[in-house]
Image (tube, rainbow, N blue to C red; front, side):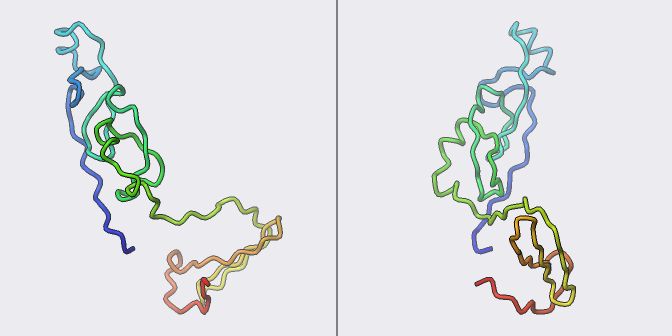
Length: 140
């Protein structure tokens, strides 16, 4: 992988929202003092802050950290994420393939499947079965 990735942050611990300071539902003392109900705690996947639902109304992808599908981020982080940061770094393959016939060639690390839709697919299984021999198959 040629792309420099970022490590996901450690989730921070807090008894109240780190943005608006509202107490979470287990913070009984602050709830009593402020005469308010406690809120559910969430975590921003970009910065790791403990935040409430009002301060994390946005969801987005962030492939640089490995989040190819939408995850919760705080409103502040959402505003800092650029369109380039949302560009997918993964290759997705259709997983729905009703297999009617299958053959695995252990020596070359290839699996051939034929679906009930009469589509033939060739799968590189070397990462799964640990075959180190050349497959003799070009992806072109």
